[in-house]
Length: 323
Ligand code: ATP
Image (tube, rainbow, N blue to C red; front, side, top):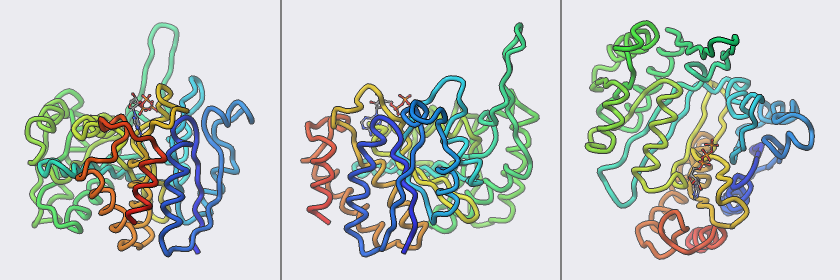
């Protein structure tokens, strides 16, 4: 029995969580889903966007499934706090097109520091955000990226940074990258400035296998990945630490389409597949991924973001039917 905390959150987070749990129920695995709250609606009810009970539940569970939350100005981000509380220092975002073989790479984003350190101030004259980059976290994330590339049989790992403008902080990241690269002689290391990387992802996506980068750059590149695939509704992500995992779609709560049954549930469902892999249920994960791949290739059932007219539930029903 696996204890799984589920946090649907706000907006389409609610709409994509429900079908995901229905699909997980079709596997042979035995799940105990523990629903918890976070986000804007939670804030309205309890005066906090992340109750301690939710944090405790995540810590006590084998994994957490997280939908999406709407951010609230002046409140610390619920997801950033959860990543920190659970020490989930790796953010893994596979960008794979099922129709264009040129696009198949994974972004490994440092998840614990960078510009997400919650160190921002306004002293009346100046506003300042602190970007913290450490040797330890940089080496740790680069090591994960090389290990991951080796595990999935990829040949290259590319670092994205801006060490020409940020020679101290991104100098540390770049140095850590090449130090760790020495320990993986079978993998080819390469690095680009983040702006060049943003361009090459569009012009030559096939040259990338695994990309490793700092927190904000990784966030931006993953949305660019969403653009490459045509929709953010297709990209899953895993937040991983030493002994816990939290799995969430790359997209946010999408207030523009919330409540309209239009959201694409695939990103959330694929995130649950990353959870199945984390829990050593590779076969079950592969089965769901293959089914989604088949549906995308067939192109008959498509939510509006994919250029179709089917709704969230119809996509989910098709996946369950094929499974
Ligand atoms: P956040 O700050 O939480 O990232 P956001 O509004 O900036 O929120 P998203 O919520 O990810 O970003 O939405 C960006 C765009 O992508 C919106 O137009 C939204 O409708 C669309 N979008 C995001 N997720 C999906 C999805 N699952 N299905 C369809 N469209 C989506």
